[in-house]
Length: 412
Figure 1 (spheres, rainbow, N blue to C red):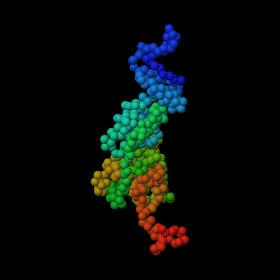
Figure 2 (figure 1 turned 90 degrees about the vertical axis):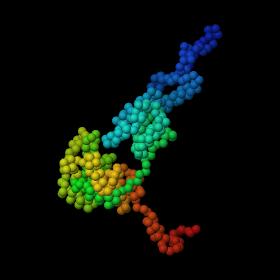
Figure 3 (figure 1 turned 180 degrees about the horizontal axis):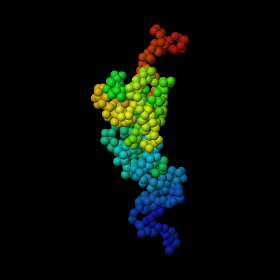
C-alpha cells in the first residue's frame, strides 16, 4: 500500500496529555510538502512530490498509480526520459522493410523529424509539440504527401514507445492534432503520341525501354533487371522476378517491390520488338550481389545494359538519358511525373480503356491489392454513362409505355 508523507510535519505524542500531536519538521516551509510513496510492479519503492495545498492532487495521483499497477498499465515515470533520437534509431534498426525503404525512412527522419524532436525526451513530447512541428513542415513548403509520410513515421515511433511502456499515450493521436493529408493528385497518363516521341528521342540502345514499360507495365528497376530468362515464349508472358536497385550506394539484384513476382501477358508485337532488339544488342551477362551489397553474387543475361556492358543506374540514366529524351519530345521541364513510371501509367490507361478488369490490372502491375489500383486509376476507367443509356433503351424499348406490364412495375 502506498501512502502520502507530509514532509513539513511529523506525528508525535504530547508528553503531558499522551495525545497525538503534529510537530513541525526542519523542512517546514521548504520545498515540496507532500511526498507520495508507492510500489511499482517490480516491488521497488517510487515517489513523487507535490507542493503545499495540493494534498488532494497527491491523493488522486496515488489512487491512479495504484489502479495502474493493478491493471498492468503502469508506466515508469523515468522511462519517458529516453531521447526521441535514441529511441527512433532503435525503432529503425528493428524494422524489417526493404533496404531501399529503410534508406528513404532514415533520410526523412534526418531531414524533417530529428532536427525538431531529436533532443526531446519521449515523455516530454505533447500534442502541442506535434501541432507546432506540423506547422513547421508547412512553413518549410514541403509537399503534403511528404508531410504525411513524415507524420506517419513519428506516429509509428511514438506508438512503439507506448507499446514498450515508455509513455502512456501517443500525442500524434490526440484529437487536437490534425494529421497532414496527401493531396489528391490524379494520374495523367501520357498520350500515345508522347510515348512515341519519347521513344524516338531515345538512343537506339535504350529505345526498347518504351515498349517494355508501356506494353507490359514494368517498373523502372524491373525493366533494368529484365533478363532473357524472363521471356516465356510458350506461355507468352514476361516473368517479372527481379529488379535492379541501389542499396547503400551499390547496385544489386533483388525481388520486385514487396517481393511480388508476377507474370505479365506478352503481346506478339512486343515479342517481335524484343527479338529485333536482341539481334541488334545481344544480351550481356551481368553479375551483381543479391539483395544486399554483401549478398551472394548472381549472374543474369540482361536485356538492357550500357554500352560498357554495365547495368543501368536509375539516377544516372534519368539525368543523362531519360530527361534529355523527354525534352526532345517536347516536355519542356520534366518532373517526377514524367519519369519512366509514366509508361506504366500509360499501360494501365490502355488496359482500362480496353475494358480490362481492375483485378487483372492489379495483378499485372504487381500492386498489393486491387483496391490500391482502383484508387489510383478509377478516374481513367471508361465512362459508364453511354452504357447506361444503352441498357435503359434495351430494357424500355423505343415505345412510350415503358416496360411490359408483366415486369410488375407501376407508373406513378
